[in-house]
Length: 261
Length: 316
Image (cartoon, rainbow over all chains, first blue to last red):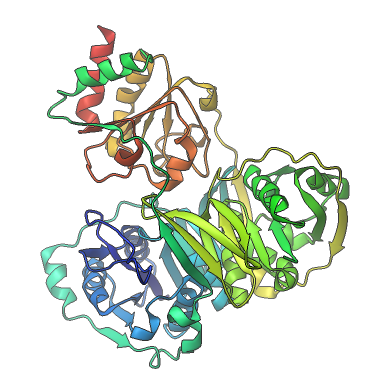
């Protein structure tokens, strides 16, 4: 079987996130990283291979600016065999629908039996991409997968809902999104980082990918940001830097002040 | 505005509170049609959505819709959605999957984590907090129905006081591929004997606690504070503790007098379940963790060091 893992470049956790005042797009000028939620998707793909399944290839698929090549290198270092980056100025400003269409169009050509996505992107905090991609591909879907097994040409997945856990079975090819608790993602070692440089990355323009540009980018967006404003003011909390447990007195005093001890 | 269609998620005869909240919100904007998909749906039960703001209830009843899976529901709602101005969804796992699948099917704009909806210039305006709730973003829609997905607990689910609504049945056409995923079973949540929604003090923990071997540390702190232990989805999914202890979007919504979060990042899925707590104290060594943005007292420190010392100090 072949596996495709969708990955996204997001601003790194430590960089300040802001929306550009004029374009209303996310300011991507700061440091970026591979979406941490996608690491669990890559890890699961690697574990399927290590678990004895005959995995022909693992391909990392990304839509994003040119700078997404760097986080894609990390995906290759972690164990993807090749990468596909669809990048084009025409894609900038795509909304969820446009992105799902573009990813699905690229995925359709990857010959993947299992498409894995992270449960959400750390910058947008939506968790809808897998379901949208699955509808485009007309493939069975399981989201928020906390446990996965691949058996007999299909998958058996456990997901959490508001009521506990559902066990869902689906034949391959299928699309899943994984919970960030499905596994502990590994770190790439130096040898793998060096080796990743020899692995191929296909860079595709919108035309290369066969995309109808009226469906992507800012002009194709069906959801349009109209305004951006500060949130309701909330009184800032108190902050204490702890060194070896020296904050305890202050915590106890705070709890006493609030009348909870 | 001609048509507001509200998808109502339900499970074992219970409507989802988030769906009911969205229905009430829709009713405050105009005529709202509720959509219920299931197998063997009882008309009088569905009609009860009138008391939550539905002026009409459309029921799609088919064996394929009884499994609690989203893809056949997309097939069932699609024809109605094409005629609607907006299709609204309360937060929920199935609800989100249906919303996303439908938006893809229609090529429609989808707006997630919505906390406010208004009508202006004949269209829907949806608002959401974004970028770790540091900014409010207002969006409009173009080229087809708006698909709007609510944030958990964003819309109150009290009834609107109306009587039963008229029920109309539709026969859905389900595609073959939509039923390839099947529900093979459900795990009964393990009973813990404790209802965390009743506790005045909750000591909650997440992955930052390191491993299940450290749970006695938070148990001891909870005991010292006369409270109970709660957890994040990540540690429940990882099997450290039972689902009944989980706070957040797919777990319990709590509002204790004191919520003491140990090694919890405060991702939005957790925040929506505990943001209304009286006092929030966070202990997390990651100074960039979102929880430090909304805690009343933020301790930038290692929970594994601070928690046992705090327990000892409280015992004095």
